[in-house]
Image (cartoon, rainbow, N blue to C red):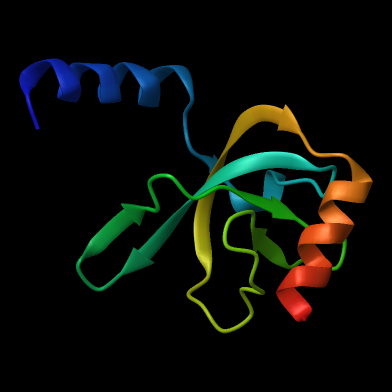
Length: 96
């Protein structure tokens, strides 16, 4: 990672801070998630998720259910909302 890339990433993190999971709402907002493992915290760069009203997080691409994956510890919004139809399609593909 170059110095410029690091500075851009730090600026992005300042503008879009990680938020506690308790503040996440199931309103179709596309989010980034931060996970925790024994080596430290790691974001899933490039993967975006939405929260279903039943409390399940679904990755948008590829659509899979996350009940078997690690639990996220923080989230941050992408400031874009998905339509209910698009969310239903992703959920159907994840379960299918």
